[in-house]
Image 1 (cartoon, helix red, strand yellow):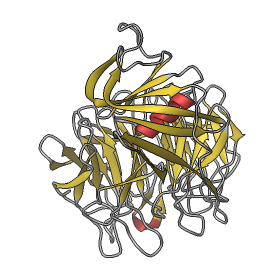
Image 2: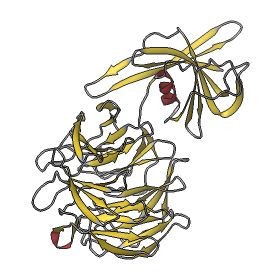
Image 3: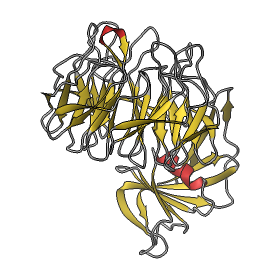
Image 4: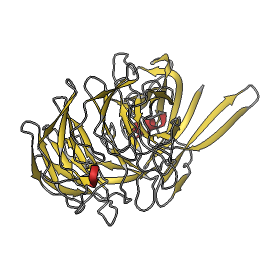
Amino acid sequence: MLITQAVEQDTRSVLMTVMNGLKFQCTSTTCTPFLDLNTRNVLTCQMACLAQTECKAVSFHLSTSNCELFTDMSDQNVNMVADLDTVSMNIISGTRFPPETTVTSASSTTKTTTTTTTTSTSTSTTTSTTTTAASGWIPTGNMNVTRAYHTASVLGNGKVLLTGGRNNISYFNSAELYDSTTGTWTSTGNMNVSRAYHVTSLLRNGKVLVIGGFTGSNYLSSAELYNFTTGNWASTGNMNTTRGYHTASVLGNGTVLVTGGYGSSNTYLNSVELFDSTTGIWISTGKMNVTRAYHTASVLGNGKVLVTGGRNNNSYLNSAELYDSTTGNWINTGNMNVTRAFHTASVLGNGKVLVIGGFTGSSYLNSAELYDFTTGNWTSTGNMNVTRGYHTASILGNGKVLVSGGYNGNTLNSAELYDPTTGSWATIESMSATRRMHTASILGNGTVLVTGGYNGSSYFNSAELY
C-alpha cells in the first residue's frame, strides 16, 4: 500500500509517497546518500529532506532513527529492497495537496500533516483523509518517584540513570534507569545517602560518581560510585569540604574537578578539589578567586575549565575565571556583560561557550552571550524570546541548542532553539508540563529526555522526549 503525504516547511510544499518496509538503493546499487543524519522520527526526516532542495527521496530506519537523503528518485520496482525496519519516501515534483491548516499563536506555530489513503474495488474508490498536528514533544514512561533537584547521567549502555532529588515529602536515596528502547523506568540500587542539590559525573571506567549535596538537614562531603553492570553503589573517599550547589567537571586526564558551592555554617565556597578515580582520594587544588554557588563550569577545547557567574553572600556575579590543570591555578578572564546565577553554559561546536538566561538578583534574563577562549572576551548574541532561569540547555546533533522550561516568576513549559550560525532564537512547541529544576539528557538516537521537576506547587514523575 502506498500512502501519499503532504508536508510543508516554510514556502516549499511537496507531495511525498511513503513506502513502508522498503529500502531505497538509488539508481545505482553502489551509491550512497548525499546526507546521512539522525532525526527524532519519520516526520523530522521528511522535514530534513524539505530543507535540502536537491533531496528527491528518503529512507528512515526505525530502530536507529537514521535518516538517509538521496538525490535520485526511487522506483519501487527497480531500486527498492525489502527491509521491515525502514520507511522510504519519494518526492513527487510539482504536485501538492491544497494548503494545510496552520494554527498560529503569539508564542508558537503548529503545522499540520495531512495523510490520504486510497482503496479501490471493482465498483468504487474510497478516499479518507486524516489531519493531525505535528508535535516536537512526545510523552514517555513516568518515573517511579516524583522528584526535582535530581541528576541524570547517560550510561555507556545507553540507559539514563536518575539519582536522588526531593519532593514535598522527603529527600531521596533512590535511583532509577530509563530504557529508551522500551520507554520504561526500572528501579536500581539505592544510594547509601539521601541527597539533593548534588552533582554527578560519568567516569572513564563507566561508573557514575555522585558528589555532595544536601540531606534536608545537613550538607554532605560524601561521594559514592554506581556500577551499571551490577546496579550497586559503593562509597568512595569523602571530599575535604561539605557542599551543595557546586559543579563537577571531568578533565582530560580523567580526574574530576569540583568547584565552589554552599556548605555548612551557611558559607559560600571558593575551595576546589580533585577526585582521582584510580585511588578514590580527593585532594585540594588552587582556590577560585571568588566564592560562588549556583554557577556553571565548562571544559574548554584547550583543556582549561571556565567558571561563570553565580552568587555569594555579597552579590550576584558577572565574573569568570579559568582553571589550568597543569598548574592547579585560577586566573581571571573577561567579565560577562550581565551578572547572572541559575543560568546555563554550553560549549558549542566552534569552541565558544554560550551562557543563557539566569537571575540577576532582581530580575530574570533573556539575554545570552558568547565566550571566546582564544581572546578571553564576551560578546552578546541574540536574546531568547522568554526570560528564564532554572532551565536546561542541550546541544543537539545539528549544533543547535535546545532550552526548555525554567522560571521567571511563573514556571514555564516553553522551549526554544538557538542557532549558532545566525545567533538567533526560534520558539518551538511547548512541553506538556511546566517544569523547573528538571533534567535534560541527550540520548544515543539524538532525542532529548526531560525528566521530573517542580512547578511551584507540585513535583512531577512525568518525562517527555524532544
